[in-house]
Image (cartoon, rainbow over all chains, first blue to last red; front, side, top):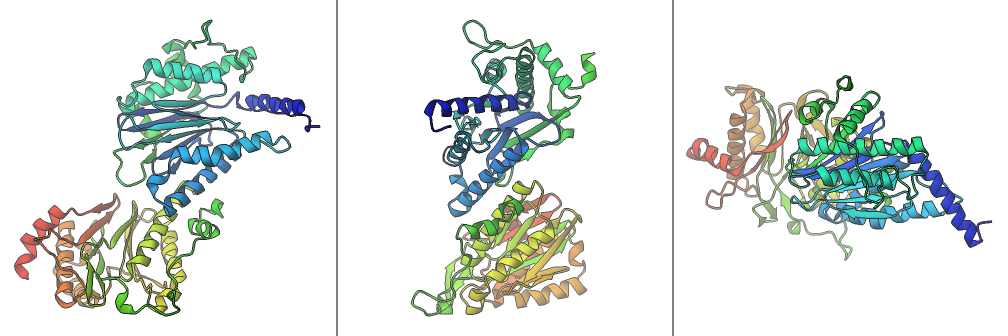
Amino acid sequence: MYEEPYKWVEAVDNRRHYLDEQFRRGSPVVAASYADGIVLVTYARGTPKLYEIYDRLALGGMGHPADLEKLRFTLLEMAHVEGFNRSPSDVTGSRLLKNGLAPIVKQAFEEIYKAPFIVKILLAELGLKAGRDTFLTMNYDGTFEELTGCAVLAASPSAQSSMHAWLRQHGNFNQGSLSQALSICLLAWGVGSLAQREEEQTGTASGTTVSINVTADASPSVPERDVVLRHVRQAAIDMSVECAILARTASGTSKYRALKPNELPELLSLDLNPATNG
Amino acid sequence: MGMQGDFFQLLKEQGYQFGMSPIGPGGQSMPESEITRGTTILAMKYHDGVLVAGDRRATAGNMVMYDRTDKVLELDRYSVMAIAGVPATAYEMARVLEHSFKYYRRTQLQELSFEGKLRALSKLLKENVPAALAGTGAVAPLFGGYDVDQETAKIYFYDILGAEFEGVEYAVSGSGSPTIRGILHYLNTWGQTPLNAQSEQEAVVQALRLLTSAAEFDSATGGINREANLYPVIKLITKNGVTTVPDDRLKLLFEDQVVRYV
């Protein structure tokens, strides 16, 4: 039945709707540069969503844990074989994602008799100097985007736009401290999570162009800081903050470090205690 | 296999072959005099952990090939391998191990155990047996590391076939090792302070004296050359990880506590 072109297009469209639905309740991921590195933040329920890929590369993911694991291993294999056969400096996020991962994910998405990857990927790559960090995001259909300063993953394009708007408004990329970047990223997570919740409540299709927070001129509006902070505190009741850094000043070749839960209160300028909401 | 975190197996699946062929392209074995070799290395316990040191000379027969060789290689935050033997093989082993430890940690989301690291080195040495027996790729390394689970520093040494032995207080390898092995035994048995009770500074001074003694009796061991600012490589492994003793400190200690005795 899919030999007819319009039926194939219809099937792909159905698949897109199915996948958008799978991400609706996913936890967004935020990554941003600060003066001495990159910070990645999300909220997680048990299963980790942030990983070390190579000496200067970190991965953040949304979606099905099994699919994320499969693609994580693919990235790890590609990165380590390349780093061994050539040199660690030849392992770049751009090559791994554009030449390695994206074609695999695109093929799986378009082969409508097979299961697609229910996954969105964020790769953060630490530069040798501040201002040279790069970010790559990849959607479930294999489309990718290269960014500087910050990057986000969320269930819908509109939620991502809201998060980007928040980060642009409050972020001081490449210059601020880890503490500042961490707080801003955590609130950006709250902006994305709130946007997703509103979309779910109003039944807005997440993959479409309609968005709760999009104004008439299509530039996303962002909620008040107090509203976001209250939501972030509320999320701390049944989820835990997961945070990792790529630190330029770290000794040795591996720059990735997952922050321990007891490090966060010292670093965060926010009070995440849900009881504070009153 | 990748799911098991075995990087060496992953490399093999991609067609990688470890080690050199024992037979040259013309069907002949290489003359031993043409093969570059590294020389004296030592590891010893001290109060805070393990010290691993190596001289800087690489030779081929009577020829000094290089006087700035680094034979003490950091594999990860808690492990160091010191090499004696054919550098080409030893550096390849270190590269495989460094990637293997990282790959395991990143895939399995936990550190490879100390025993796992020891086995990984043993496995590579066993892969290298044909070249080792042919005389084209023999390596007899030392492995020093801090076992985070057992909260103790340990030393191991290997023969060229991959057999693994624990050096309880110290271990040595390379052409200058017979000289310093005797000294270490004497110091540890009748010295004022047993090796494992030495302070960091005492251990570093002992290492400088030992390598200077090895160079005195073994032409293949490079001595300290102050004019060229050439000092041994000395690494310390403690519960805080691996640190390298800087040349400036070695220079001061050498001039203050070693040079007057030679």
